[in-house]
Length: 346
Image 1 (cartoon, rainbow, N blue to C red):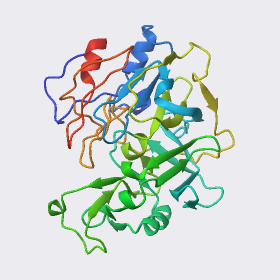
Image 2 (cartoon, one colour):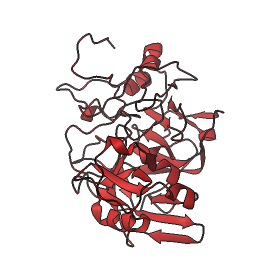
Image 3 (spheres, rainbow, N blue to C red):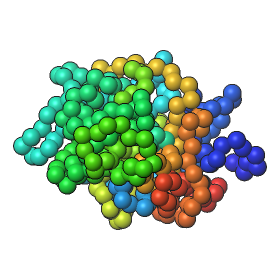
Image 4 (cartoon, rainbow, N blue to C red):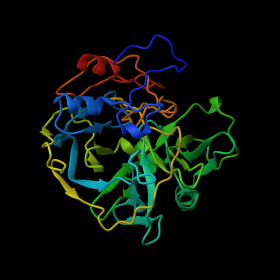
């Protein structure tokens, strides 16, 4: 690893994914591969815990799973290859529903639903097909102005009127992630945008937008903060569990070399029909051990590549912690990378 002295990007880049998705004419070993090859970790895998929107720190753990950071079960799901090649962290989303209260849940998707989604913490917001979002927006009286101001608007009062509201993402019968309304609605300065006519005056923005194309559905930070995510590049699987917010304790279980299994995980998604993912040049993910701080923040999270669209600010990183984990501070409207953690590991 060397230090670049000239660059055209405004932030550092850290790729932690498949070599096939590297933004380079020649593939090279990623940090995860080098750590495994050198025996620092037993398996090419790492776990990401972003923590809540209000948290200023998060963790990335190489070669293990921190069982204190999530509520069981942890479900291992197969990654969908791209044209037969494992390039990105694509998995099958099999359902989406909205819960206003414990006795009021409305499904946004039909029976037998299945689409491919990319887990990308290099993307601040999440994007889903407009068909599903039309139903969702109607349920929460959202106004889609993505073709105008580039935002989806909701009434800020939703957070106080329905504090227990959750947006529920299903990936199999065993893997369900509940995203609280507090993680998807962001306050803004209304004078900073040219607002359309809205049926409410207390204006906030919503963290799920329509996908720009039918084959590019992304679950970004607005989803990933609520999930504990394990990226197992060696066995081509993703582990998902409900994140426990605000947990500083640690209980790490290492991957067992050659076992082919994920620590503490149950297998899921065997009967799910994966929609083949398509190649999307320039779409990747970036590595950071920080949590998202606002709707305008720079990218955060794990990386499948060092693709052009995927970067994370390395300014403000403070320290590395525990095993091969790293922790960084987050500034308002900006994200903090964990490049310092990489330097400490070098």
